[in-house]
Image 1 (tube, rainbow, N blue to C red):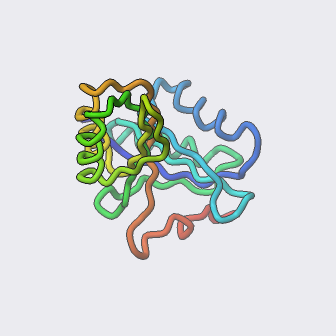
Image 2: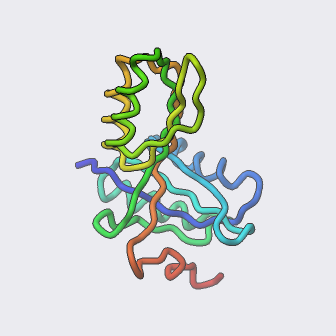
Image 3: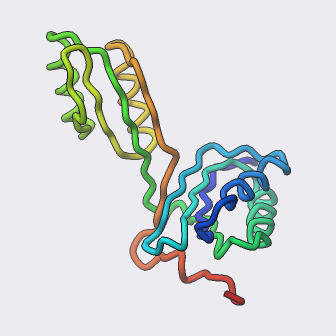
Length: 171
């Protein structure tokens, strides 16, 4: 049975590494639901967070294949019960004067922030779990979403659950 899983991958921060990681998925016919990547506390290392679906065999194969890539430092299937996950949403909504108050009330409930305001539109920022982002988008649709961008999941372990504890033995 296919289930959602989150992979956290530490890689050397070099040109072409992301392409090699993504190519591994496409060559094997695995779909990436979301992908997030950025530098860590070290500019030499990037962290890639990938959300996908698959059975236990698929998960095991992906981890094994990723660990074979030269620039991969570590790979971990995140324990979803012991992981904090968030997405970022930026959304621009057409706003007429009377509607802005309703949008602002919803912002308060969802804990969104105004990041740009003009006479004809308001741009909002929201972080949270995917279900919260989905609900906010659904609320805003009747007001006229003119532009929307959303990151993939980024995830980090709770408490002492630290990815760096799982570095390759030979590195």
